[in-house]
View 1 (tube, helix red, strand yellow):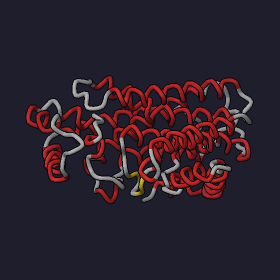
View 2 (cartoon, one colour):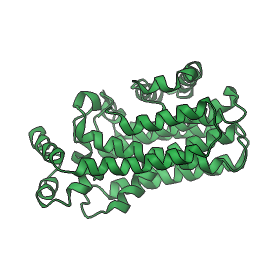
View 3 (cartoon, helix red, strand yellow):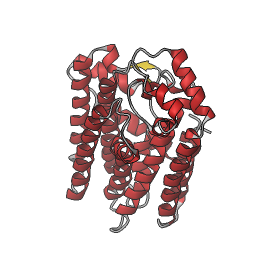
Length: 320
C-alpha cells in the first residue's frame, strides 16, 4: 500500500498544496526558478504538509489559512535537502540529479536560501506569536543540525547520543513542528499542542532511523541513489554505529571513503545483514513508534486520528 492511500480523503487539499508550492518557488530569476522547480518536480512523500493538515483537522479547519503553514513547512524541508546535498556532495536524490550536480554548489546554496525565505513569507499570514517562535526555533535547530552533520563526517568515535541528537535536528523536529503548527493554525484547544509536537517528534525519529536502515537494505532503484550512500558520504548512521561495535565490521567501515567501490560497499552491506545491527536498529525505531502511538491515544477520537495512526505504523513497516 502507498502512504498516499492513508490520507486519500485529503486528496483535493494536497493537490491544492502542490499547486501552491509551485507558485511559491516562482521567481523573476530564471536560474532560481528552474533550480527550485527541478527539486520540487523530483517528488517526495509530502509527509510534513500532510501532518499539518491532519493536525488542523482537530480544530477549526480552514484550508486557506492552514495551507500557508503546510507550504512553509515543506519549503523548509526542501531547502534543507538542497543544503544537505551540498554538504554530502550528493549527485542523486530520488533518482534525479541534485541541484548542486545539475548546476553547482553556489547555485544550490542560493536556491536553498531563496526557498527558506519564501517559507518565511508564507508564514507571515499566521498572526500567532507562538507559531513564529516555534518556527524560528525549528529553523535554528535545523541549521545547527547541518553544521553538526559536517562536523561529524567520518567521526567513528561518536556515540548513540550524538546520532540521536543529530537526527532530531535533521528530521524529527520538523515533523514535530508540522504537527504542532498545524494544530495552532486551526486554533486547536490549548494543552494539545505539546502532544502534537511529541507525536510528530517520535514519528520523525522512527522515520529517520528507518531511512537509515533502508540505506543498507533497499536497492539502488528504490533509493534513487547507490546503496550505502550515507556511509560513503561519511554519515555514521545507527546501523553503522552498531556495526562499529563489531571488530571485523569496524575495520571495514573505517576504510570507507569516496573511493570505495560498489563491490567493497556490497561486501560491507552483506556482512551487516548477517549481523544483528539492522535488527537492533529496527528495535529502536519501534520504541519511538510505540511512544508516538501512546501519545496519539491521548488525543480526541476522529477520522483524522486513524490516519495519523496508520501513517505512524506505515513509517515503521515500510520497505521503501
